[in-house]
Image (tube, rainbow, N blue to C red; front, side, top):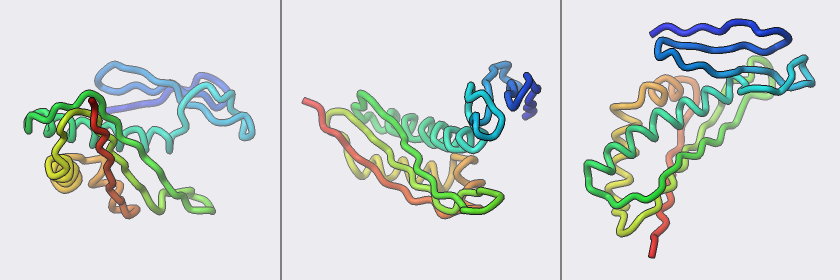
Length: 139
């Protein structure tokens, strides 16, 4: 995989990758940015959430779980000094549906963590990752 960022002025960059999609990165106004895009560390958190979310929803579909909505929330703790690396990460999987089996959710989360999600495998080398879930029963 190849990716690049191209300076757009100030602290703003446009990121692209092999897929051809683009996104904007920027910094806060306090450090010279215009606050027009993601911060790089935010993208790491979003990347982690997206990676594991794709795994888990795929596994839950294969297990024929009646999921009507699904999200992964990422909460990070960071070092107080430079570099501001993640020192702890918590993932919360929120599964909404009818008759969702908690064991299926737990198994899907574990398979993502241990086998499928490269973002999770890389980031857990830097910080511990805690997994939680909520199941919201619908009507």
